[in-house]
Length: 107
Image 1: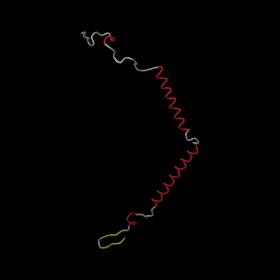
Image 2: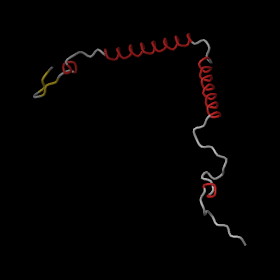
Image 3: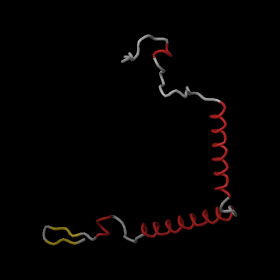
């Protein structure tokens, strides 16, 4: 620290109250290396445990097939909705027992 006239000049180290050694940079670099290494080990252990790459897909395919079979079985034997072969869902006036409807005029 030195004074030039009325101005006080302080070095960076004195102003920050500590030394600048770049420790944070090294902590970040080492931490990143450790995380990448741990991730690589986890991936390798998972790959070593799964010897058949299609095994997981077979299980999913089997579950989908079971669901489709169950759905087909449920829809063929029982239905929760009204099923009709009529083109008019409400039926005609005569079918409902009502008089009227569209009058027919004979020529």
